[in-house]
Image (cartoon, rainbow, N blue to C red; front, top):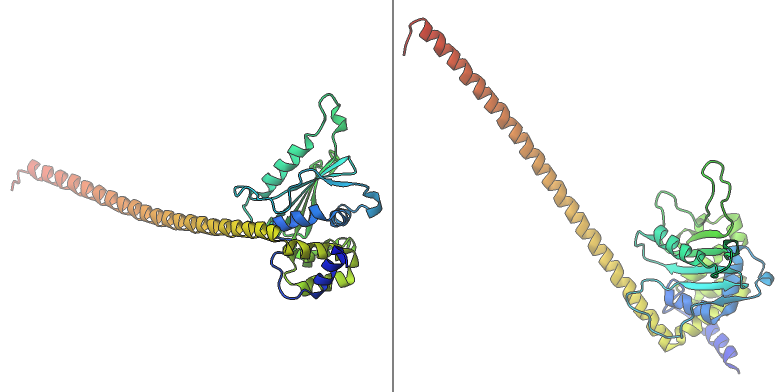
Length: 303
């Protein structure tokens, strides 16, 4: 029995919870990097490109399996060169740092600057930034799969067809359109979020093309070095979440203190106004007394 058959056999026998699923950005990177079939099928679904039209999907920034990532790095993006003519940036993100629009645009703009020195700007390769987010990007505008482009504000006329920003919210599969379902984008999202082997088997039972992905997830979870880096990433994410919660709590306390100070300031201002009115009344009374005393003196009445 060769290694692939062994992995298939072990995967089919696996039960219970996964150590790490594909929302772990290290696991996400390892599976896509090690299994080009998964990368090709995913791009085919998201970009609506027939699989047979994807001749080559090459990751431009590979890392060694199990290689440690700088703790200061919050995300593990994957840069893909598709068919030697299109750059695609893939990112998995589960923590909302409230900067995704700015971050994704920064990544996209950097990659858009890909004209070889001496070439005309018309030669720029198309770029895509595809973000898989396990949170709602815009609370007032939730959407499963959103596509953003540069277009005319008046009539929507597209400025260029080489600049694309896609956002897939993994927590909103219930909002997937018929078009999304047709291309199995919601199925990919469910596979990414699956937390048990039973869930994965249920997905692959009706989507056999994802079998190799499931087997790669199993193999990566079984690799000690990869699993260890996934653990490090999970620890970092937990740390970041706690820091964010602590910061939010601190900001709330500051806001509460500011409100209390504002209330006190209002009370002080009100008291100052009352004192000012009292002083004004006392002044008026003193002026009135002075007038009455003067009138009495003029009439020859003295104390």
